[in-house]
Amino acid sequence: MKDTNVLTYGRTSVYNLNYHVIWGTKYRNHVLKGNVEVVLKRVLQEIASKYGFSIDHMEIDKDDYIHLLISAPPKLSVTNIVRWLKGISAWRLFRECPELQRDYWKKADRHLWSSSYYVESIGTTNQAAVAKYIDDQRHQEVEIDDFEGR
Image (cartoon, rainbow, N blue to C red; front, side):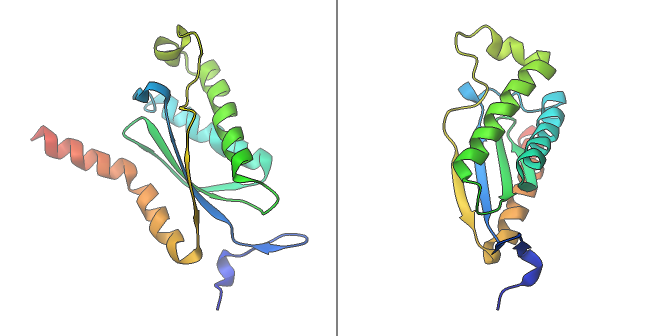
C-alpha cells in the first residue's frame, strides 16, 4: 500500500516523482563554498518555487558538486528542470558573487557548470536513503578533512 504522506495531489493527477540530481563545476574548481554556497542554495530554491517544483534536500560535495533531491509534477521534464537550475543559477551567481570572476570571467566561454549532469529517479523506498546521503555530503567531507589533518 502506498504511503499517502508522500503523494502530491494536483488538479488532474496524483503523483510522487522524485529525482536525485548531481552536477559539478566546470574545470572542477572548488568554488561552491562561503558566500557562493549561500547564494547558490537561495537561488536554487527561488528557481524551484518559480517553476513549480521543490528541492527537498540540497548539499554541496567537496566544494565542486551539488546534490539535489527534487520533487516535481509530471508536467515538468527533468531536462527542463536541470536546464533552469543550471542556467539561471550560473547567470545569477556571476552577478551576485564577484569572487567567481577570478576563476571563470577571463575564460572565453564563461560556463560555471560542467555541461553534464547525473539524474536518477527515486521511488518511495529509496527516498529516505537518498535524502540522508545528500544531507551527509558536507558532514562526510568534514570528517575526511579532520582525519587527513591528524
